[in-house]
Image 1 (cartoon, rainbow, N blue to C red):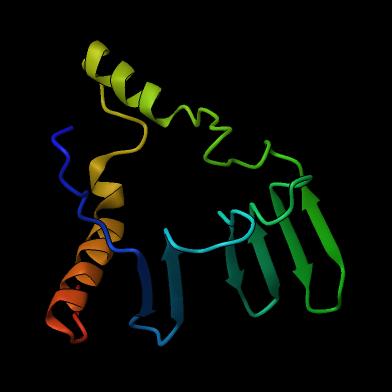
Image 2: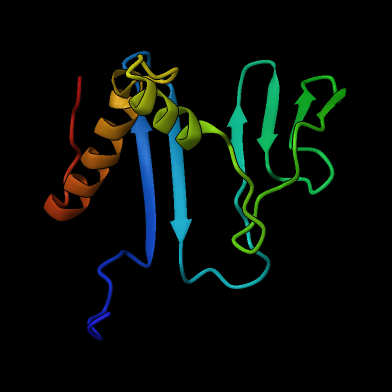
Length: 131
């Protein structure tokens, strides 16, 4: 470390609009106070899926009729209690064994395009369209 500040946005809010018209939002903050929140909510036509919102269940689904489905897949991750996903290990194994990785770089290309477009949008203060 040379004493320079790390360049990172304190807060980010993104609105994503898909070709089909489906909207998605993403909010991230390093300045959020209160309890840590690493959750993801997905609102669908049949209900709401909450990921890492409940310390006892990794995924909870609340159907439109109020029925709940609970999944205890793993423990909730926090910055203090990181767990291994196995993704990095699988990638390193693929490199060492010279085989195709289970999750290819191509499969995450769309997500990375969205990330880079959100940065470009912030810098240019305009909507960025990606294919």
